Length: 331
Image (cartoon, rainbow, N blue to C red; front, side):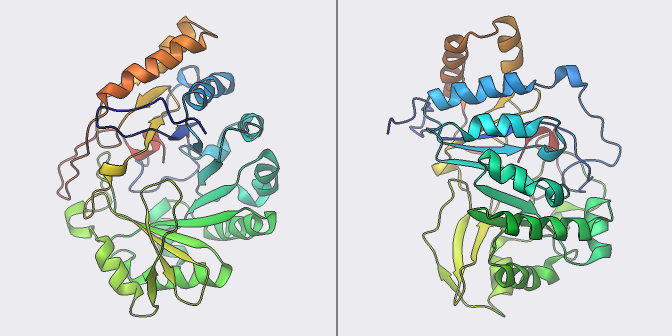
């Protein structure tokens, strides 16, 4: 298979695209967006055809994994048609979605039939009151129903994503692993990333390292190092005696930038070369000025890769290092 033509100044080949299809969401997770979030006008959001054009350009340059993100991608109207087009691309080794799970009860089968192979479902608490505090929405039962619908639909892998915060949900770590093991799911624990200003908590106080999370898990389960890989930044361990893989995404305590193979495109068509950097290339203007000019778009992507930074520099103090919220960037 052809190597990726997208090579940054540090010799890293880009084979993984995270493509945001909307900045909107039906939740208001405290670490992801503000309660009174102002969303982009619809005219500023890439159309489904424009999103496909971006994905097509990346595929033509050697990208082999695409993860569709948001906001909440499943609130985007017409999304299954885009997924079906991407799912039909033989060059893609993996088509996945990150979702809050709220729409899966009615959409899981449709997604599977469109060619989506893997799901990442956000779930930070199994306690209804605490879940409502995290998401600002009382919809835990709806998410749990969605997870069951996804299991019935027969996805290749289903993974739970949990952002762990000290004093807020770190006491649920082992229970979340138990939830995953009982259902044959994988789970990744994520150190909170300092994106956007938050008012619900103080990040330097609630920061919980991956090492602390692993120690909590090992009070109940034996973890064995695993070679499992999904193309993303998780480092995996396996729960002994089960099929469950436990991943740790550690942007603070174990910087994973040296092996970075990914870029992001926001719903507004901005190419984000690094999650921890404000720089971005406006692909939307290029696409709308030169519609259908795939060669020009590919050239712009290859040129932009020369600006990809070596690594992010996240800190755990209260200073906001990137002003955009995670919901504006996409998974």
